[in-house]
Image (cartoon, rainbow, N blue to C red; front, top):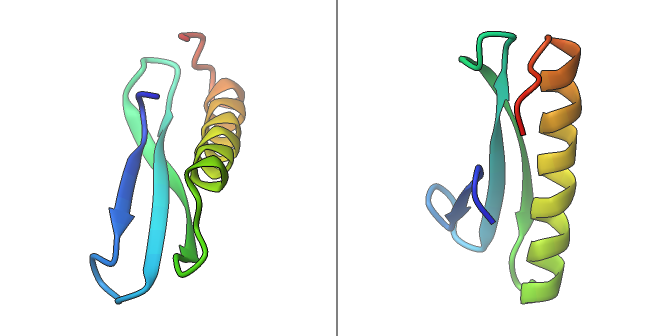
Length: 70
């Protein structure tokens, strides 16, 4: 998947985060949405699920700001 960032224990050991950009009607980055979570029992399937949901949220917010890209 493209269009997201992942942090593994970057700031705090045992935590991860996933972030996606919020785009305005010009396709410019206007902000971001992210989630943080503990990683002690994180599976690849769970990480994919979290990425998918954060990306869907970012896409919905971007659409409300007028972004029409893919």
